[in-house]
Amino acid sequence: MVKTPAIFRESGRMYSADTCVPVREAVRAGHLQQVALSRGTYPGAPLPRGVLPGVKSIGFWNAPQDQRWGLPWHRNEGLEITLVETGSLGFAVEDQEYVLQPGDLTITRPWQPHRVGNPYVAAGRLHCLILDLAVRRPHQTWKWPRWVVMTQADRSALTTMLRHNEQPVWHAGSAIRACLQRIGQTVEADREGSHLSLLTVQLNELLVLLLDMFRRREIPLDETLSGSERTVSLFLADLRESVEDLARPWTVCSMAKQCGLGTTRFIHHCKQLTNLTPLQYLNQQRARAAAQLLCQEPRRTVTAVALACGFSSNQHLATVFRRHYGVSPSAYRNDSENAGQDAQQ
Image 1 (cartoon, rainbow, N blue to C red):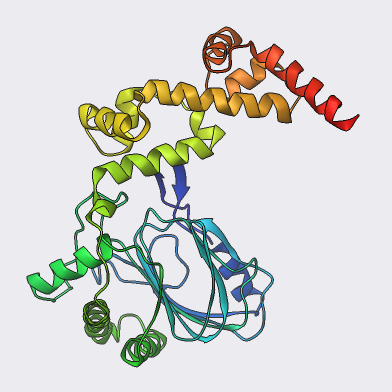
Image 2 (cartoon, helix red, strand yellow):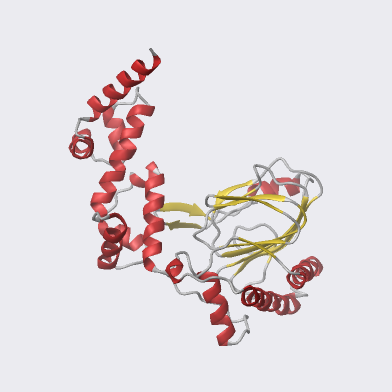
């Protein structure tokens, strides 16, 4: 039975923790072997309460043949680390597409949308760790669980490298590959918590090896990636891309709260990024979305378009629309239809 997914909002959009329903169905059909310890909505044997807090899922899957499913665009509740041990795998993060090969390691943060499969998962073995560090936005403070026994200096260094560099794909060295293989063997051997002490040691080893990889490669760091301005930038970008989000009854306070910021700070960042106040930006994007719908759905009434884009009425839409486009919504639609007919002649 699939549990109800944990719901959280990020950058104005509703997300659910990935329940991995395609994985469950593939396992049930005998197309995929999945070995994992998990909690919440993730598939696998349940982790005991109070043991390895923060670990949402740890283990691997083995696909002996190409699959007819993939994991669509989603975000996880925590830091996700995966390793392709064998085979290849289509993978995408934001606007970047990859074909992962053996030894390729992926690292995605909670605010990074990603997809697994292109569109389907290929034959291969994939190791995965999802670790919730109590962050959903770039500027929030990372909170490592108590079982992480790295020194404070090393923990701080690893946090900085993960926050200030968002490269999603790395080629792991032999030490990281071997560590994740051992973790997979430990998960597979566990029976009702029999190997959790060993697993704790191995997870700490993995974090130390990641830190060592970052240090040896002297990765470039960018402090702006963890700033509150970036959080606002991601919020505005998601708002721009989703008509459903635009239709929400936003206020300046609710937008600021969604970003985890005070109103004054949110307004400042919005002005810096767009040269507009939050409500000016919101109306601009609502008008833009309305213009697209007016052209794409000519049978939809102006009132229906207005409500779909977050305007309280067609009169409200008309006022804002004329300010941005210089004509009424109906005139804009007619001009677009006439232009389209002229182009066909």
